[in-house]
Length: 430
Image (cartoon, rainbow, N blue to C red; front, side, top):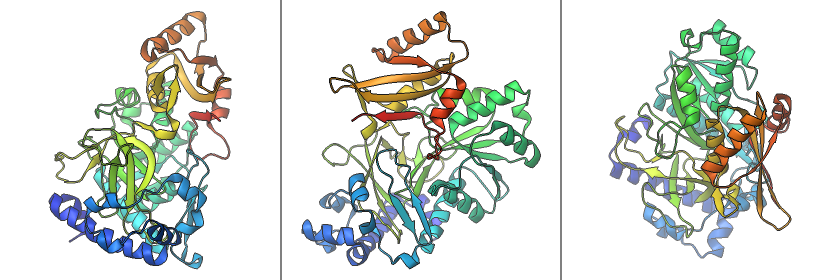
């Protein structure tokens, strides 16, 4: 069977394939992974008794802390066989390195090739990459390798600099851009200011990375609407992490990111590490398939979302993930209200007076969470201040602290030299 056809097989065939790969993974970990070999002994795990996906619940969970504290022990190959060293961004703690072999790089290329096909890409497309390909950023190299495998054209412009992005679009005529959604809004704003007719350009689609463009019910959120209200392009949402070395990408139906079943097993778990039902929030927990360098077993990502299992009109019979609702470690308890940063981002995107923002959370003198919103507004007058604060109070039922800053100040906060992503959330809690 062609790998590309697996997602279209009947669910029972997909499950059987995953179970076979799971048994191969367990044998591989027992032979080559110092961390898991020790864990199997400590937990008295007989890997030969694990035969089905239902048996996964008999295995222990792996956490981000395990990976941070024992990073080297996850490596299953000699370092001479490592071709690429990547690292996590460190959003939820200290960064960890993920080592890839030649086979892992080929797997990564296949993953992104599959993702671009899911997002209706083809060898006829030209992709403009508005993201970094350096700083050990796995996603950058993944996109590059995937487009090469697809046979499409690649324009590596890098992040930021709207003027350069538009100059490149006008000269090289890409059909698809790969970018962070909030940066697409900056492109739109620049185009307005410089009288660029965006709907007469070559760009027809955008593969959106790093930020949600949809609400949990899969409707476009404010960010997605702001883009499509101005620019007649098709948006495709994605979800991925460095550790899983795999992406979940929307098809044209826009009803959740499709699982690549040959590359990863996904569980959505509750607080007791039990599988939740469809359409119920839980923590994304992954088991990598086919990874050679640093495979992971029942790894809890810290991201909370839902899954959907009803058939998709694209014909794929794979589980789909909702947009990420929040990250467990970033959850804020503020004045008796539970808030995720992503919810604050959605809310701030709704406020027309707010051009840009950074959310900072810290611990106050009595040990409680405190929220400070750094806002850049074009006109920080009393009337706008009242309108912004009233809107926040009405929507949140609580009032975070607000500090108005200049465009230059907000950019300094968002673009740290040590970071490869736009910083919109700063966690200073102790």
